[in-house]
Image 1 (spheres, helix red, strand yellow):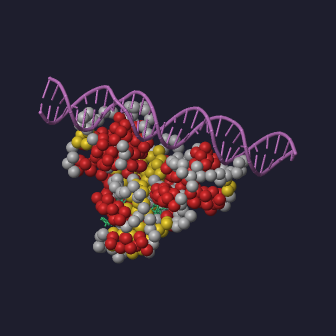
Image 2: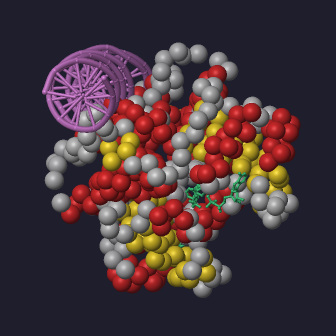
Image 3: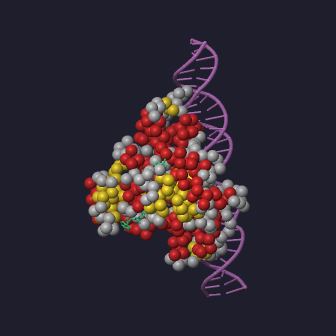
Length: 210
Length: 210
DNA sequence: AAAGTAATGTCATAAGATTCACAAATGCCC
DNA sequence: GGGCATTTGTGAATCTTATGACATTACTTT
Ligand SMILES: NC(=O)c1ccc[n+]([C@@H]2O[C@H](COP(=O)([O-])OP(=O)(O)OC[C@H]3O[C@@H](n4cnc5c(N)ncnc54)[C@H](O)[C@@H]3O)[C@@H](O)[C@H]2O)c1
Ligand SMILES: NC(=O)c1ccc[n+]([C@@H]2O[C@H](COP(=O)([O-])OP(=O)(O)OC[C@H]3O[C@@H](n4cnc5c(N)ncnc54)[C@H](O)[C@@H]3O)[C@@H](O)[C@H]2O)c1
């Protein structure tokens, strides 16, 4: 495969294009131009073509892209042709919301285990999953070939959970705790930080006063 | 004020530095170097200094930065010296989690209204807020000087809610629905897209197989 | 079948962000 | 008080990403 380095922003946009295309497909639209995609997701047409060009030629000049084909390509690129099993640690407010989030399923993600250390939560059900004690995590990871873990525990506990995940052999972590995690190089981490986006808004609004 | 354009990535990092500094302060640490911050949040020391340099000179050569002062500066830059009132539309799984999220409060955000159109939800309480019908949104916005709204409704309804928010005079929207919103230029929008981060991970893991 | 229109793919260019490297400033030790 | 160690602030260099422009290809119309 391409050794070429792909900008992470490109991957971000591909994910967005991919879901936009699925909506078009559901509406019965069969062909789409880079301009249509651009307008639908709020980028420039050149950007759309450039992003796709990293991975091949998927369109027809003078015509555009076949929606179903392009969905297949983007899904393939993003590594979503095969389903992914996930584990979630933290069965609190956010963890519960994420476990019941339907769109994950649509994109091929299945949460196969939810873990917590609070005895009052263990044994309870979220969606159709029983909350399990942390001790069971390595077993669930092994049994279900899980490679990705989600952290939804308080910041204080996040590093400890990351360590447990690494030890259990997970290769990637999606972290919702507002703290930077220390993990070995072979483990990919991405943080989702909700306050940051809010503070970009306040920064911009505050500027207006000036 | 500076007319200079600041990279959004800089604002993102400032928000992260700011919260990291608050943790240091809580631990009683009074002085910090760009290298310490860099290590704590996972960027380069030069990056930290450059980011701060957009806004002024906050450190002392040979010494570093005073933690409490730097917190004050970052908070000021991010527009957080004064508290912000927010409204939330969508009292579902995610909306409820967000309303009860404590860290928002710590950063000076107060959710003053939660709205939904589901009659079974209206009147219920989330944290200490009663869920209100959408019709009440303009009033709550006016009464509380709200400038920022959060959208946590299904994608299908998000544009409609954005329109209502714009009409009510909101100037910024934080959108959790996985769809791109159409709003006038004077309204700032930022999307929080959880699937994207997950798909960056799958992209990277899928690459490894190659 | 030729001309006109549409839209891709890509190379060149521009813009933007990060890193480097070092002079300048500070505090500390002897 | 002079030298040494430290760490900032910043201009220049580098690296990365986005935009612009257009040749190329395909379809459509007459
Ligand atoms: N709630 C939100 O809207 C929101 C938004 C952004 C970020 N976050 C972040 O997500 C994380 C979770 O937030 P939340 O609101 O769901 O908190 P929460 O308190 O509702 O849930 C945290 C859960 O983690 C469990 N937990 C704590 N320590 C643990 C450990 N060592 N091992 C296993 N489980 C443990 C707790 O028992 C609890 O069930 C926090 O880091 C928070 O900052 C939350
Ligand atoms: N749950 C998650 O973890 C999660 C994660 C990422 C993104 N999201 C996105 O956040 C949004 C909300 O997700 P959720 O899981 O909370 O869904 P949900 O179905 O639990 O809640 C949605 C709420 O919006 C309300 N609603 C629907 N239409 C409305 C309208 N026109 N006006 C006012 N209220 C309306 C519903 O009554 C419901 O209470 C969705 O767009 C979803 O894609 C959710």
